[in-house]
Image 1 (cartoon, one colour):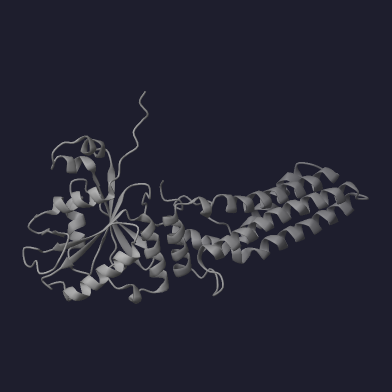
Image 2 (image 1 turned 90 degrees about the vertical axis):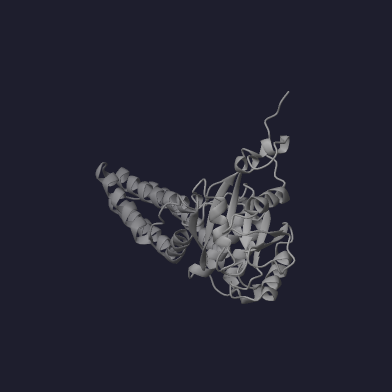
Length: 351
C-alpha cells in the first residue's frame, strides 16, 4: 500500500466553487430561452456545486480502512501541524467533522435544486421564473459559504499529509532506536548501501530516515536453506527516527507520542543501539533506561539490545556486539533482526 494521501486533489475555496458554478450556469442559460433557460441555469449551478463538494469528500480515503500506522500518524500530523480542531476534538476526529459538514452542503445543494425545479414548473411567467432562479442561486451561495471554514481546514490537512513518508506497512520493518550519536544512521546507511535507497521524510515534529534491503543480500552471507531461499525476494524496511526514539517517553510532547504510537503499529522488530564507551555523550545507565522504556512501549515486537562501537567498549550486557566503523558483526545483527521477525512470504498455491 502506498502513501494514501499523496494524490489528494486541491481543495477549492467556497468563492471558487460559486464562481465556477454560476459562470457555467450563465453559459448554459444563454443556449436556451424562456423557462428552459432558467431551469437549465438552476440545474447546472446546483449540479456543479453538489458534485464538487461531494468530490472533496470522496477523494479522501476512509480512515476506518487505513492501516493503523497511517491512521495514527495522520492523527498526530493534523493535530500538530494544522489549526484544525479544538480541545474537545482534534486530529482526524476534527477532519472527519469538517468532511461531514461538506457532505451536508453537497446534499443541501441537491435539495435546493429539487425544491426550485418544482417551483419553476409552477411559475406564472418568465420573470417569475427568473426571480425564483435568483432566489435559488442566493441560497446555493449561502450554503457553500457556510462550509468555507471546513474547506479551508480540509485544504490544510491535505497540505500537512501529502508529504508523509511512503512507508509500506505490509512490508517487514525494523525500527532502529537509541540515543543520539550511538551509530543509528551509520548502521542504516551501512546495511542499505548496496541499494542506495536512503530517503528522509517529514514526520510530525522531526523527520525519519527510511532504507531498504533485500533478503537475497543476507542469503549470500549464510548457508543456503529453504527458508533463506524464500526470504530472497522479501524487501525489508529500516526506519531510523531521530528526534523521537532517542529520548525518554516523558520528554516527548503529545504530538511526538502520537507519532511513536504510529511506529508501534509499524515495527516488526526494534534494534536499540547503545554505546558503552560513552562517546555518544550519554551514560550507559541512561541509555539502558531508554531501552527498558522502549521494551515496554513496543511490547508486541521483539526488541534487541545492540552494543555498537564494540571495538571501543563492551562494558554492557547486550544481545549483540558490533562495530559499524570496523564492519564487525553488522550482518550478524541484521540476520538476528530478520530471524526475530520470522517473516515468510506468501507463496502461490501449488497443486
